[in-house]
Structure formats: C-alpha cells, structure tokens
Image 1 (cartoon, rainbow over the protein chains, first blue to last red):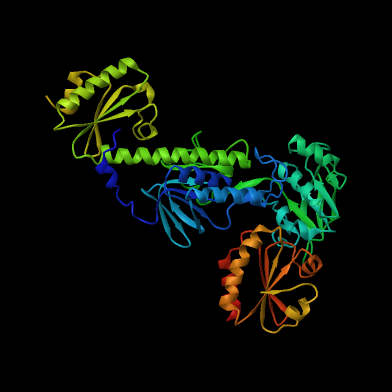
Image 2 (cartoon, one colour):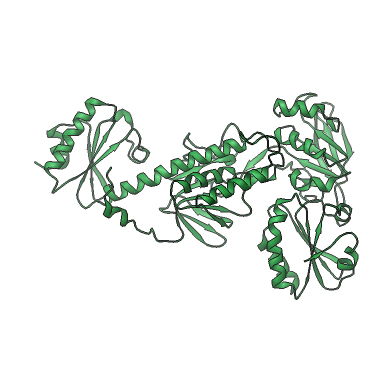
Length: 421
Length: 106
C-alpha cells in the first residue's frame, strides 16, 4: 500500500496526550521488554504499573539463568536495568492502578485511578501472583511470619526457624537463599521422598545443603499463632497423621495464579484463568496482545516473559501500522476502492494483478487501487478472512463497506465487480 | 524522619504522646526503598501534626519481632505509645499510607 504525504499529516487525534500507539499493562519483564521494542519502533508507548517496575522478578534475589547475566545477578538489579533501557528509548512510565478497561472499543479505553488512557493497541502483561495455600491462619498471619517473598523478608528471620512449602524452582531456590539467614529451614514437600518439581541443578544443590531439612509426603493444613506464627500443622498424606511443627515463619511457593481478573470477561482464558494467545501473542480481540506470566504457556521465566514482550510489541506495531493504512486508503477513501490481494511468490496470480492494475488506471477518475500482500497482512485475514489459499482475490469497497468480490480475474469480471463498462 | 533504633525506640515511640508512624524497612526490601521518598514527602505535608520515624530492621531485628513486624514494608501507627493501626505488604502504595494518615490524624 502506498502512503501519500497528505494522509500522514491527517491522522486524527494524534495530538491527544492520552492516546497511545501502544499501551502496556504491567511493568514486569514482559511489559518492560515490550516497552523497549515498542518505543524503539517509534510508537508512542506507555507502561502502566501500579508500583515499582519489575514484577515478580524484582522479588527474586538470585537470578542466575538470564542468558548473559550469570552468577551474582539479582532480580531487582536486572529489572532496574530493563526499566532504564525502556525509558532510554522513550517508553513513558505511568504509575497508576487499572480499574476497568474496554478492549473492544476503538481506540481501546483503559480507566485507572488517576485518569483515562486511550490506545490503538494494548499488551496485557499483568503477570501472576503467588498462589495461596488457603489454610486457616494464612491470611491473618501474613506479614506476621507468613510470607511469599524471601528476598523481602529473609533478613527478619535471622536466628529463627522457617518452613518452606512447595518443591518447584521458586521453593527450592528461595529455601537455599533462606539458609543464609534462618537458623533452620525445613522444606515441606507433597511428593515421595527424593522427588521435587524443581530443575535438576537446583535440586541437587539443595540436597547437598546441610542447613536444609526435608519433610516428605506432607502438606500444611493450618498455620498457628496468636500474634506471630508459632507453628504449622502438618499432615502426612500416606498415614493421615497430623502434628504441629514449631516454626517462626512460613514461606509459601506453590505456584502462581494469573492476574487476569480485569480482562477475563473480554479475553479468552483457559480454565485456570491464563490468557490464551496465538504464537504472535494475539488474543481473541483485534489489537489486544498478552505477554508474560499472565499468558497460557509452557515455561514462566524472565527470559520467556521478555521474549513474549518482544513478540507482542512487534505484532502490535504491525497491527497499528496496517490498521492506519487500511483506515486511510480503504475505509475513508472518497472513491470506490478496488483491493487486490496477492501472494508475491505466485507468478501466475501476479499476472492477473497486473490486469487489475491496468483496469483501475484506465478508470482512475472513478476508482482507486490498493494492493495488499495478503501473505503478510493479518488485518485482512482477521477482518475479511482473506487467507493465502484464496489468492489472488479482488474486493470492491464503497464508502468503507465491502460490496463485492471476485476470485476470477478477467476484464469481464472486473467490469462486473465495479459496474464500469 | 527520626532514625529509630532499639536504643531510642522507647523514648521516640512508646513514651511519645500523640500520633507516631514508624516506617519499618530493610536494605534488601526494594519496595521499602521505593516508598521512602514518598513517606518523606508525607512527612513534609503532615509532619506538623504527627511524628514520622523509621527503623532499619537490619540491626534491629529483635525490636521488629518484638513489635510483631515480620514482613516488609510495614507502617505501624502508635497513638500515645499504643499501637493503633498497621499497613504492610508488597502492594502497599503511598496513597494507602496517606489515606490512613488522614483517617488517624482527624
């Protein structure tokens, strides 16, 4: 499609302060990476984050598996660097809490505590939060010994005893970190002796750590204490036996739940609430993408969150670009528009497009032509189901409406399509 | 803000009349460090009507546990030495602190 200079200057609403090309919800690694890519692509990019950037990664002290950043890297450190990187390219950081959103409107509208934001495209990177055990005492004793963040609270447990609940990567790695502070760290594992869900490298290191004690086949059924945690009630799943185990702290790492509450009535989610996307991070709604831990995916790590963010930002940029051109050249055109969809690798098909080109040129007082490489254009595939198997194909648009189409491309069929003799 | 330790906690907080807010923080608590400038801002706005203190939990761990603080950040409010309110948690926002101050100051 051609971009004519007068169209570029005509973009409506471009001077609106709160209208963004790309608005990213969430400032964790997915949102920050999307910010780097979006802002670098010269889009007006905003990142809405309720608190400090970094997400869950900023609560992970030791972060040693982000390629290129080995031993000694900390979660807060890496997140700080990512946030600065996004800011350097011009991403705008907005501190606000999102209250509601309308992702179907055009532009999309996001309402926060501090105001309304409009966006041509949105990336939902709201992340996930620690899953609660849902046992008696957990809520009441939060901050009183119950914790979901070792980095934040570990120092307070110096010389004290803590238990860690869970056996995934987070549980095992944070338990190791806690041994630097606490007197004794006991890991409560639901599985049989020797079986953990964490990666092999972390598991082996943990098994060798003399400060770690293990209780297998068990779950926590209660957290007890008056003002502070005093003990947990454990249950052995094999014998059914229950007993109280004295401890000062309970660190819970039993997975996460997605922060999709705000969007799940508009976006397709899986039964656990994670947003379903295609491989380009596209959701069921046009111009709305999801990235990072909030998405239904195989591996939830900083690196996969960042990768999601990059993909989503590139897809969002393509969407914004395609939508704007389509709007200007097809939907708002004064003359009827012939749209010729083609596949650049299809030689025979392209011969026919030349015919269309000639035809429109002969009637350029009544018609205009837009050529679309439909193998690369997602907008036409999504809105008009123009898929590569249908090419070449010709549409006639009059005043923004699709009127007619033809897959047979001859002089006669073009005359019939346009009604021009 | 008054830097409070285990040595002067009684004097500055327990035996202090009126409203006192204690910001319990730690050098590893990112969110605490981020909140601190906002708390200092609040002190400028409300400091004439209440007292603002901070305790570095590193080095005052027993004091923290004695005051039932086992999670950071924590903002604990005392009136005439009596504990009257507490805000804590990783999602604590400056607006929440200001709202609580307004509630208690009137």
